[in-house]
Image (cartoon, rainbow, N blue to C red; front, side):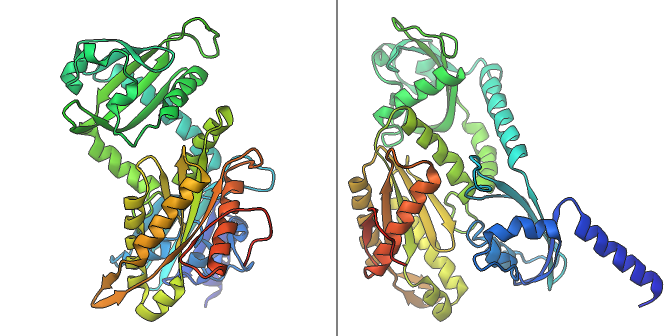
Length: 433
């Protein structure tokens, strides 16, 4: 190599090592070829063995589908993922906010990948607040001619309505008087306690907004937004009479575009379930609701038994098929309101609002029985497998979601140590490993 090229090479290396973002170059299988200090600093807390020899292994617990994304990327070069947001459990000791990393992964050629990693925790937090404000404004000023306006009493029961209610929902306004606003939601989507949660959120924040499936009088569904705003200022005490406005809109025409964006940001690429970051985002409000008004709240950790043997014996494609089969079984077993997520590898989590530990144990047992009696067919191979589950429940001694997950994880290890294909409730004492 000429002196000029050596100087350019040295200058490039200095740039890579001093760059204000994390940079890593790997082989197609994730083996690290080059990594700069900032990237190593971001990845080191994720490494189970303290090493950073493989990017996919280092990120396996928080971005379990990354290897699958690379394997499925057929182009000779190009962007495998752009600004993929990765939810970590927590930041450094003492941090209350979960950390979020952003990963962009570029396929350079058939052998090499280049990754860019950065901590975007604060920018995501600001962006989330901005999107929430924009959604509130959009609900008010866009399509103002196509909305249903109702007034609610302090219990969330309908008191009055505008004529658009019947046109949008098929319900007679008079027939709705005295009914809870959950009448517009699918039966398993809003438990009774959630009605009060929405009103308390509106009291605290000035408004409460959600999107999802809504029901018409004839049972047909549409994608709608529901904005609740108090008729009093945030924090203003009005013990004699509290009232709220509810704005209901049909936004089915925007659902396809919104759903595609939502899936790219919140769904696990392989299974279609929530990813780790989306699970933390959605679970935190549930814990906040529990702190305001304690009600049963349970968590189930699910793990496919002997999954490594499935991969070793049948190949990774078969392993992926098993994980997709398990995800489908979980969707069929748990309720629409439950938060189901793939946390990493073959490990899944489910948060069950308004559910006791015993109730969650019963549902988890049904899942074990469902999986045990089914088989997965992959390219002429018939694969049978089982799952184990651990259950924990929220109580005053649980400080945060991490603590609740840790308890369920300890119960899961007891289930595996006890023979697998079983469910264990968390109890105080050393976890079996």
